[in-house]
Length: 286
Picture 1: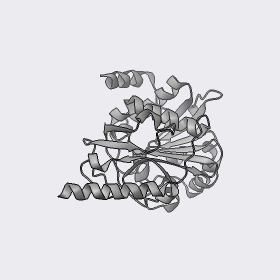
Picture 2: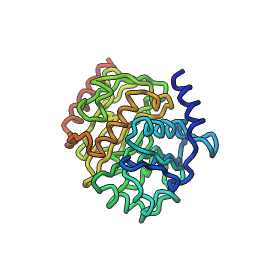
Picture 3: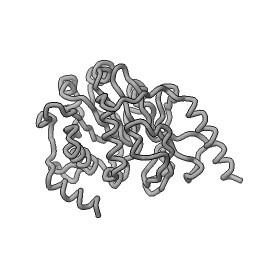
């Protein structure tokens, strides 16, 4: 009921920001460009009913920005027009909830990866299918941390997630362990030696089981900028989840520098999680 009321209110209150030039960012607020374009599967959380209404994930972020007073959001599904070197200079954080090979010019992508994102105070937040984007383009998946390789845990599965770093501002709201019904990805091009894993599936308590770690959220430094990725967000209901929303606030504060937290690479954690997952899978097969 709470989710339906929120959606009804927001659909009345929010209008589509056709281009980021309509931004009304206030002084001192972090400026966010949220790209929700799909060049593959279009998730319900980013599906717009028509050209005058925002999608559930967009609505949630616009409202969260207003309620927190911390940031303003411009939403776009037109990467060719809005994800450009000139326009990126208007923003501090880029959010992706995207799929496929987006129509971004190579020069603009190279500027984003090698200049813009490496600046202090700048950051990238990837939600759910951000890892199902540019899967054949190494510069992108190297930055984001991995590529979608199937989702054995579909949107109807309830999974148990272990939080490895409860002190990180984007993790505090989840506690040490929690359950959620959402779609969870497994990855290829996964490089645990380049990321700080924040949370992953507890394979002892999840079905189906896999004999390897399945990370759910991670963070990394990118030059002087920061990257935060969270697999959650397939189901529209996730975007109304208070813990999830607080996690987004924490991630933004971390990127801004308001809530410092070190994110040293932790491949040893991934090795331990691999071993625990293998043991859980073997035990389940007996």
